[in-house]
Image (cartoon, rainbow, N blue to C red):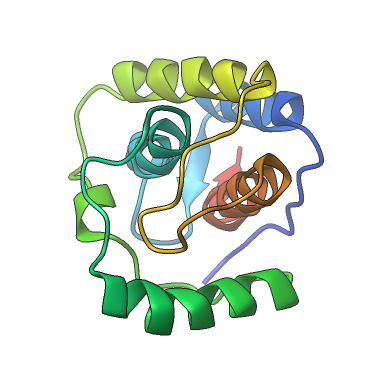
Length: 149
């Protein structure tokens, strides 16, 4: 499985990467295309900005959520095919433009966000710095499977 080494320090770097992939094309090194990745991560970005419709049960948040949070903040790279919220898995679409635009708009909102972000559906309260770290890491993980042409 081909994979790029990506790391993002700013949301502008992510926006640039998405625009380059959209403009120049890419090879898929895993299961999801750019549109699916954009919808997947947009689910979490929108939740952090506007709140999640559902949260995981308390027992899941204090057990699996606590373990997963510790793991994410103590490593730099996640393994592929890890667990995710089933509501954040999307089918491939013929036209990715809507998904890409939604992601770019949410990235702009996050970039300019000054108010506290909403709690995570599985981790509970996170600081804006923690959310920003997770979003940037999440983008790096998924976009690493799209090999630019």
